[in-house]
Image 1 (tube, rainbow, N blue to C red):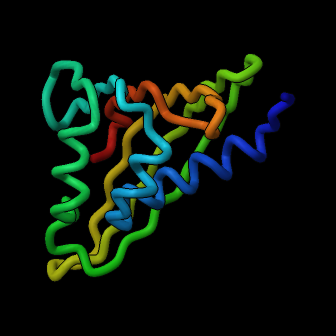
Image 2 (cartoon, helix red, strand yellow):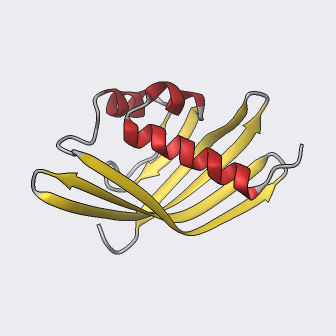
Length: 131
């Protein structure tokens, strides 16, 4: 099967939207059970599996956020058959009781196309100079 960048970015949008909207069923459906990830601001070690994110998503990790939006800058998609590597700078704007807050970091996501569709298998996040 031949995949396109548009297909991959539509998947990434769906996956990220699930995270920020607290949609655990969609996040679980779009993420491999053996996920590995690095999130520099949470713990300086690799996290494996879905348990941590299930807790965060089901407990609405966004806290006092009333509304939010995300944008992806400097997007790049590298397609190798049923494997895609996407890199971008994520900018998250959140409306809170204290006003608008901005968070920015760089992300790499590795996706594999399985019989039931794309799944994220690895994520690496790093500071983008602005938090």
